Length: 144
Image 1 (cartoon, rainbow, N blue to C red):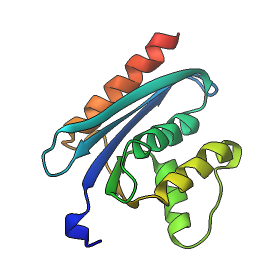
Image 2: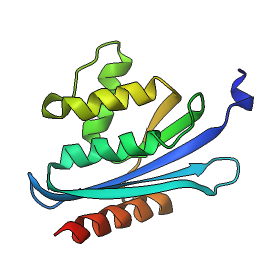
Image 3: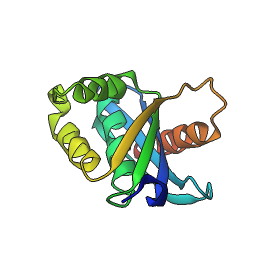
């Protein structure tokens, strides 16, 4: 299928962790690029999580809402996720260390779509990131 006919999505991820391990939250906002409208909004938390687990879960749950065969750009401020993805792009699957189960699921979801990655910082003018971080904070607060 020609790229110009493939549906395109943006996946904005947010995560927070108060302690490691401890309560944490994650969220993903998936928007359709052509309209800018929300396609899916998901969030959750765990009372015994690490910051890295929440970062990977946000990516996993966001990508799982993008239709198979679509093109997606994942926007994240997680250096941990971006480093793993960079190594994967070089042809080596580093695994996710203690989070290997979540990482394996992220890799599987990537295999169903055309995925690119974009680093974004909280200081950037990125309202969707701000929104995703707020949802993650709410999810974490709801479990404490």
